[in-house]
Image (cartoon, rainbow, N blue to C red; front, side, top):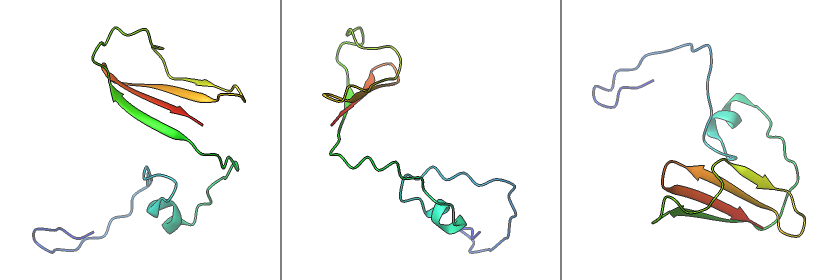
Length: 87
């Protein structure tokens, strides 16, 4: 690693590395870990919302509807945030 302020370099040997940087993960590629592709190549719209009415009648837990005619996902994101996705 390199300290941005001093420029000093040090080496570390971590027991674990967590790659939380998405499907195009630098960490995963660097470690040579394969990505399992479930071959779901469909258009998907994701909408992030902040609700004006936190009491709106929406699911209180994350839920996925596997209806082939209208698959969709609803995700809670804090007290007033909400994500919805649909193909």
